[in-house]
Image (cartoon, rainbow, N blue to C red):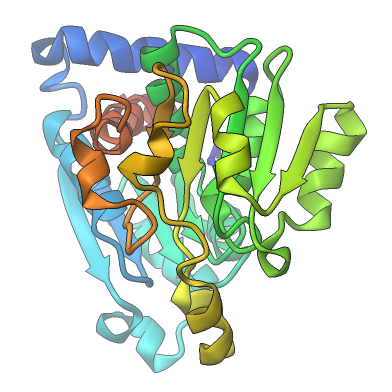
Length: 307
């Protein structure tokens, strides 16, 4: 049974096809309003979420399907000690497709290995978040028109930021990419991500602690929050949380066609005054995420032979 646990599960051709489908959904929404009629999506969210969960649910409703929802481990049999494997087997009896978020890395893979319906990873700990990457890719394509030759700055928590890890893996497939990794020393991109996605493929990148020095060279600036829930030490979180704050003053150093992105939620890392800048694209990302999740649901259900 085909599932999507990480971005490499999708070929470059499939990524482009998903974006094409999303564009068609945007242009012809009425053509898709009954595409998943009588199909059920189970959203199993064992970690807090607003955008991702509602985006999946809105996607299924707009495709004409229905949603079964679990929000929080304390409201499910996980509170009784049920394993992820048994949960996946059980929910497969009720739903045609599963979207799951879990605080433990690898949980989505365990679910996929035990479910009898497709599983979509909606975020597993600090590992990866493939459907956020789909939203990111569509946003870049709609804003820039292409991927080749872009300079992408990733700023903030690059150590625990699963959205960053997935996006690096996805963008590395396109030609002539260049990355600028902006973070405190303590929150650098993990070596396994740099080795697998960048060094082994000979993709140029540079690391810096200065947003001001880097911003003028960027086509894309991808801001991330410092994630309190990933820290074991509250003092470390408090010391690092405001390492980077994007303001209108800093944007004056940037190109006029810069695309500012953020997976959200934001805390302090982007001033609300930036929202009025035409280069702010993070709420466009939110909407694009719904369309890409619609496209992915359609693809997986068709491949499963249930559409």
